[in-house]
Image (cartoon, rainbow, N blue to C red):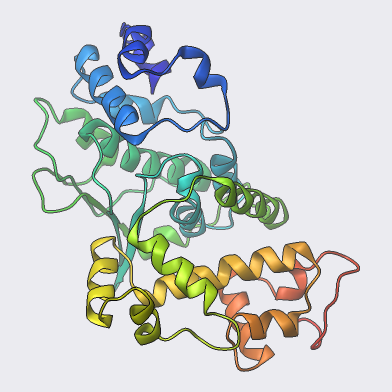
Length: 325
């Protein structure tokens, strides 16, 4: 974003000084910039650029690889939908506020932003999804519609030209609609093997990040502790959190997720980590994740990843409980 802002004549150094982030910090890969400072930089840069489509310009100039490992995980995904799923799962390696939720409705997939960010960033994020989908699939993907929670800028001509669909503003939520057939489009550079390596790498990165105090993370921690030997019941989790099951579901809904989705996310992340480590048999992993039988775990893992769990086990590791499903 700052690189694009500089090309538009913005005094980037002054913005960095104002938000208390030295320019040298931008080269420190593991450094985390506070969300408030990051959002302020977006607002200041867009205002100084005097560009009503500033966020779109950032997306258009973000070459493949600009978002490091997360970008390359899209590049090696099998389908556009899988690429979007990687953004949903691993967005926090880059930004805490990029979270979004998928809702499948008949032939349409609704992608809704969970956290509100500055208008130019919200526009740039959706533009990036569309541009990456087009670049990776080689198909001129056209969303069914785009809505933003913020008011319309002075000129929306470029918005309509980029998205090539109706663009609405001042809506209840920021969301973009894709056809399910578009998310099924194959990616020309797909490489599941490299993709799996990147997934493990980003999972490790997430584990090293500062812990978040969000309610979703609290629920995840309780689920993780109670997972072994059985599927953690909502009622038990709610009791640990000193809340009613209805309250837990409501608060998770406010973050764009559900208890079932949180449990499945925890199970998948733990399964991939244990398989990558190669020190635990598939039978033991199935028990640890709360599955009543190994075949059930195999089927679920294949639904998550498209491959059998034995494919995720390093050579020489234990594969008790049978071969590939």
